[in-house]
Amino acid sequence: MNLGDLVVRKSYGGDVTFRVEGLRHNLIVIKGTEFRLLADAPADDLIQVPHPAVSERTKQAQIKANETLESLKKRRQEDSERQLASLRNNGGPQAAKGYFDVPGKVLHLDGDPQYLKKSMALYNQLRVPAEGHYVNESAMADTLYRLLPRVRPDIVVITGHDGVLKRRQPYDLYSLDSYKNSHNFVSAIQVARQYERNLDTLVIVAGACQSHFEALLQAGANFASSPGRILIHALDPVYVAAKTAYTSVRETVNINDVIHHTISGSQGVGGIETRGSYRIGLPSLQDLSTLKVTPSVS
Image (cartoon, rainbow, N blue to C red; front, side, top):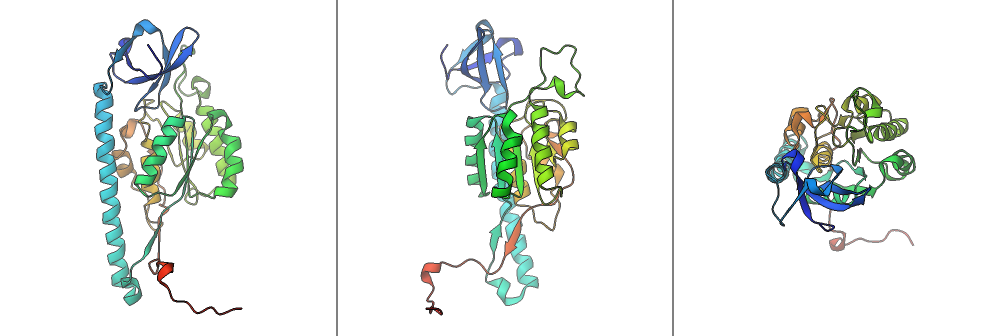
């Protein structure tokens, strides 16, 4: 078995497809191709699967991800047309000339470089302005302290790897000590809330697989994972951020709609009532190369 091979775990019925990442203490380190899951397993528990063959659960996640992407694009187009019609009805002749979009800006911190790359590609597809940084979960609080004043985002995404720890038996799901990185996400959220306390001025999307949902919300997150302590799809935080970025500042984000467009559903992601970050501007931006301007100062 080599680095990069696709495998499934026999002990879990081959439910999730993983990629081999390395070796640790005689165990093989594996990472979910679609789900934010980093794990290890003995070699005899792994079955290699051919490229591009994937498990049924992973296949269904890929189908849902594609459907969600198309749905988000369609919904954004419908919302833009509705906004334009409203402007033309209420804004007079100037509004008829068109407008320009000012979607919310995202600062995305990710504890996994490959998932970060996928996330940034999706932001680009959805035309969401975003700045991404690969940061170990333990360093996210310090990184946010430095980045927030410079980037000044409307939306912060704090994600990476998490999970309920096997070594704590019996585990207490109410305790942060039972989770791999939830305490690091909580610290990062607290730093962000010290920077901006208003839940609508700075929207925080936080968590990963099996994260302590209640603790993340209590710390100040608007949206978080995972109410049912399940695996979440690698791109679920991006869908939530994108929906917020293109929801008008005059409206609240439709939580049911957000959850519907995640791959993980209501057991994977939840949140509280939150205003959107999208604004419109008038008139539409012009091509400056076509303007004939008479200089007015020497």
